[in-house]
Length: 102
Image (tube, rainbow, N blue to C red; front, top):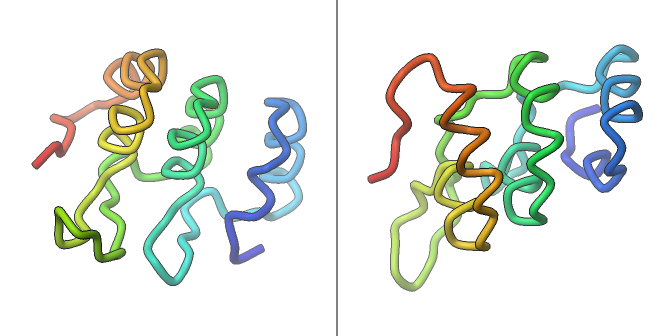
């Protein structure tokens, strides 16, 4: 699968099954939105660990253009913007390197 539409299935088990059957956890939309971006914007912090384990990039910036930015928002920035405090914590714990925030 090349889109992040499969992420609307919120169950960790279902996400794991989709990944096992070939869903690309690192895939991004035409706007650069990855499954992690979408999960962060929806507050689904419980999906971060299986997505990262399957190859999703914690520091992947999007490519969208916003009124207040030039399209360099990472999943951490989405979690912060949408008030997903648990997601911010999980991303910090999962990161092996410094998280990109600016």
